[in-house]
Length: 161
Image 1 (cartoon, rainbow, N blue to C red):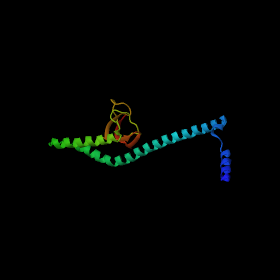
Image 2: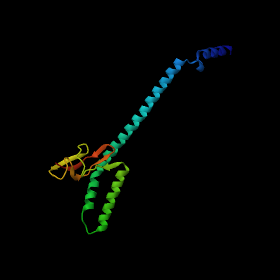
Image 3: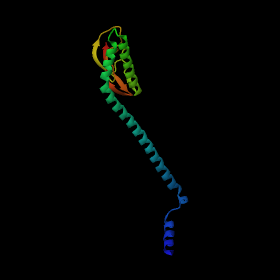
Image 4: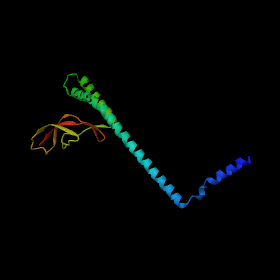
């Protein structure tokens, strides 16, 4: 038993006492802590940004496959019919579809009256019109959509001048 006591005392002597840390050691440890903390904060921000980008990418992929359905519903809502209840029902479905897209952060790209932007628009035709500004969009063939800054589908437009 006395042998165990001697070993315990030797171990205690080898362990530095916490109140015997020098200012230099403290500063080094503090600096190391601050660097690790900053690295961790940067890691959290980076992974959060990556997950948001991944969400936008996946949502965009799914929505891009559904957009032709929306196009057809909008065309159906414009068809003249004597059955006003049917026409109103189609318009309600279009609104519901649009609301669901908005819920997921998907917005239509503005076109008519705006300046042509190749990042957002796809020009399918060009006209000369002295009443319009240069590169002004005068007609939209197909709506474009985006989520955040990511374009899901470019707008197909006619551009003046």
